[in-house]
Image (cartoon, rainbow, N blue to C red; front, side, top):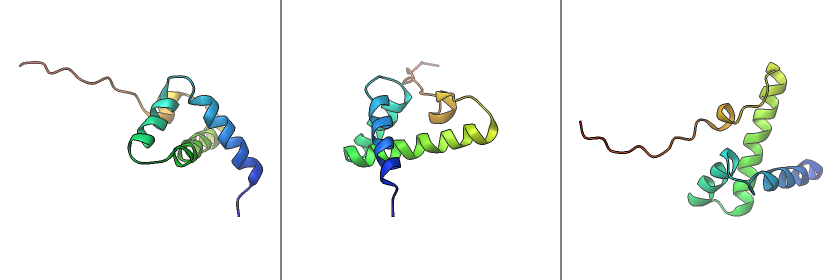
Length: 81
């Protein structure tokens, strides 16, 4: 059984974060590119964000997107050695 209020909150929270570019949008796009539909990608993103919120509350740390979603690496250029 799911909590409908939490589910509705998660949809709004994640949807509002993917309208701008950044780690959450990149995570959503990655999930979408690998076969998740919109709702599944949002659910996965919400799960990830909720886990990070829990971690921050437990450790007393501030939210940091690079910790939550990892460093987004630019494609490396081939360098002749």
